Structures are given as C-alpha cells and as structure tokens.
Image (cartoon, rainbow, N blue to C red):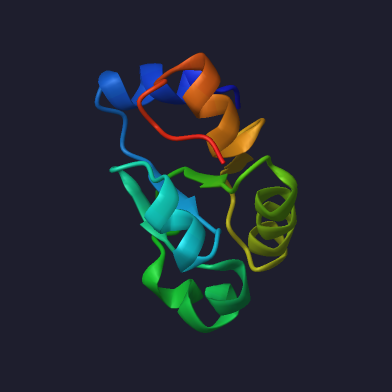
Length: 102
C-alpha cells in the first residue's frame, strides 16, 4: 500500500490496525500517531494483542522489516495484511513532511 492510500483510508475512518515494527529509538525520532509500536523482535510474543478481524498495515523505516513482518503474520493466519510501501520515510516525503526523516 502506498502512503497516500493509507492516509486516505485513515481519513475516511476505515477500521484497520497499523503496526510499527521499528525499534523504540527509531520510534522516538519519528512516529505515526495512529500506529502501535510492536518491534519486529517482539512480534511473536505480542501477536495475540493484534486484531485478526480487521486489516493490518505494517510499517518500518523503508519497508524491508515490515515486509518480513507481513509474511510472518500471513503464516500465522492473518488474512488481510499489507506492507506500507517505502515505510515511514515515504510517509514523510509523500504525506506528512512534519514527520522527521532519519
């Protein structure tokens, strides 16, 4: 999913879970207020916190870790999982320049 599509879905009130799989230090630098921080290394231990009955969008810095998380979530039985293309960096350049780049 491209950042503009995610922004549109959030603005329209679509129910979805946005998971940020970056590390806490990265999250301190830049974050999305609607995303839940679940660092990739903690995802297996925290998977039961996630809703399986709504779409899940996964974000990281550039889209590599989130792609890995998406694959894992699908293997765990999540039906509607999407990677945010370009990650939070693309969000900053395409949607909200107020989100710091690093």
